[in-house]
Image 1 (spheres, rainbow, N blue to C red):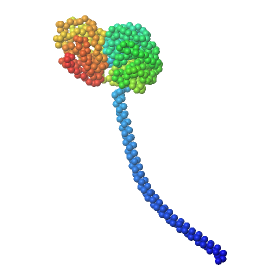
Image 2 (image 1 turned 180 degrees about the vertical axis):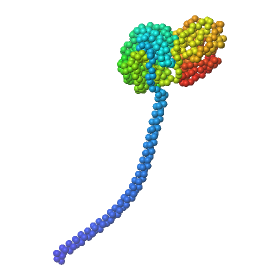
Image 3 (image 1 turned 90 degrees about the vertical axis):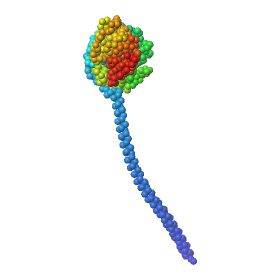
Image 4 (image 1 turned 135 degrees about the vertical axis):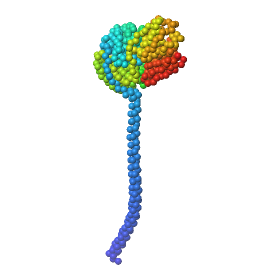
Length: 576
């Protein structure tokens, strides 16, 4: 075989092997491709199945989402409704709180009452029937009736009267005469001046203890507080305090007195029982006035008006800790708090205004513009009104806080009647006493702390024809002659009996053995044994009692409570 043939056969053999290899590769490729195709088909099928499942799941999810959205919308709507309901309830609660706390009170200036020249101090009686205004330039005190909103009497006092205060017993008032250095004592039954108490220096303000036994006088000329025993009408102690004492007040519980020292930017705390200093505390510049929260207040604070700091400083009554200060208008000269402890009135002398604040939270409530020269403010104990003295206008601005719940009696002076041996003394109980407790000449009708109490004798046991006599009857009962064994005693004070706060009216049992006295400020009734000259029983009655009557048979006592709109019926039991 030639080489050519050998080579050709080798080429053909290689070619055949190549073709065979190619065919094998092709078949392998085809086989692999087939497997791959099968795999791909399976994968695709699975993908389609997954897609269907996903679509189903997607559809289900969409349904759930839509359902959730619907639920969420319901939840949101419910939350909105709940929020609205909560807001409504909260608003209603605040509304009720406002009614309870303020009674929708909107203090407003209703009138300017003409008084004497350059009025300075002002004070309300504990029964709110009248107010006294010290007229500095005319040297008198104007008696302003709450019934008529006008001056019903003018009482001459010392030189340049400034501060004035009425005893809680309503029997007397003290007037500070700065220029003459004395205190004028006013008889509130007769509306006359009884006497002057010399203190020296320059007395500017005065405050009584709740039992009316002591009076504390801020004496700016001597840098002292003069303590006066009101039974003796004499100074029993002089207490050195800071520079230029100005404002003064006694706490509702009668335990401490506080005087502001205008020249020393301090206030001094005095212990009433020992008449010793407790401590002196620095406060704002030129402290001019001080006021306590009442006993029934939500918070018990001390408020100090700082004239040059244009602020009110607040302290706790319990420990004298500083609470805060809040800004007011220019030169606050006087402060007063409403009986519920919710409103604070501050006179701003330079702004010719009185600003009113929440006494608990200290936010501003209202500003009332006044004529030029407002100087002092007082709030009536029944919380119905405030009065601000206007120096330049010779008037007192009357501010209505809320509508009174009773009709105020007329204020008239009562002249005492001296008993004689032949005629039985006529009672003055046919009228509401002038400014409080009338000086009654009836042996059984006694004022609690009157400085001029009439003669008192125990009635005979056979005096069964004596009529029951009350302080609020519309007419005075017929007066009958006493029995033959009745002996008139010399005119003069027989006894002084202390009852509750603010005694205003009384009634005696038909047998004359017991005197029933209502105490307006403490809402109590005191039963007095006439023969023993002492209180034998105290009974709690309704709010602001102002009238009393004993039944003709003496078995029951009826007390009219004006602020609680009730009548308390009391069985006299053995106290008859």
